[in-house]
Length: 113
Length: 112
Image (cartoon, rainbow over the protein chains, first blue to last red):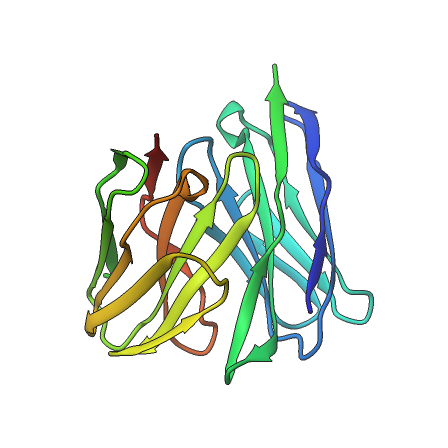
């Protein structure tokens, strides 16, 4: 099966930088995703990593190390609107010919003034 | 561009009543489609996925079922709702090499 671990909650200050870590265990790794989910809303896609290294997209960056089973999401210049849950998801393993995506339980980030 | 529509946004149903949630995707053909449930403060649980018309795979045994009568339509149903069926139901679609999943707005179901 697949296992994903990420911190339950984090707090950071407006304007600062925060790093949200995710560790995973899976067979047949084929991609890692980060989503943002505001309270009461659906998740929205942030980033995708399949090769080792850093992917940058504006204030958000995501890093992957496949050998370590590790990823992080880096948020720069934090804004109050960044307060949300951040979900790490991994695609791997096979179920009926389909590679399943498993979601972590999410890290709830609170941005304070 | 592609869009995904999911309705209704909220639903309150009595125990034992039937359920039908609908999801449609626009702007693409032959997408992979998914139904998830998210209980309060919990992670996303994959319920069903479909790679084509009439092709449904179930991840978790339950009293829910899914159907895909048309290429871009995915329906979640139940004949008799249980209290434990309450939750936030999300439909998603994906396609292509990266197979990134994009979610609908969700349906918040309360079974009383």
